Length: 115
Image 1: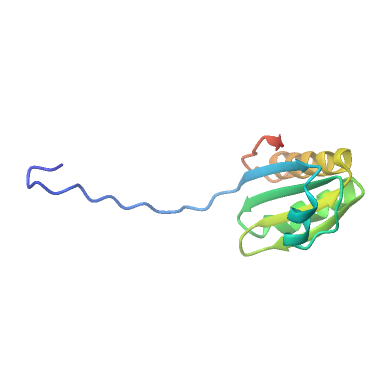
Image 2 (image 1 turned 60 degrees about the vertical axis):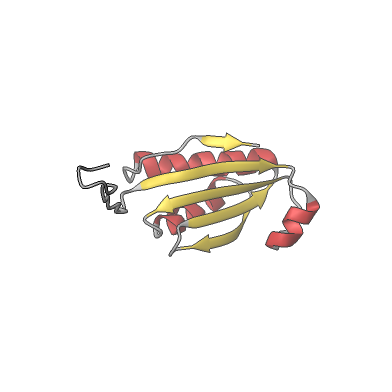
């Protein structure tokens, strides 16, 4: 607290940079999850969140060319990408997208995680 007895005021700002905030593989998703998100049951789902959102278009393009996956969702405003396919294909596609964004475009990467 400050001397006046009030809590100090802080202001938080979002300053967009080039970064991948999430790269995750959901292996063997349950059928009710797939139903709720409108995806045919597959071996895996791949999720990415990218800033700026336009990077999601590049990530989806790279992922779809790197492995046999379906691009289920791309949102250039939120930077969300969702792909589906066999586990090894989804892992390969996400890893390729992270590598291209990091190495060619200077994005700060996220580790590809799995559940």
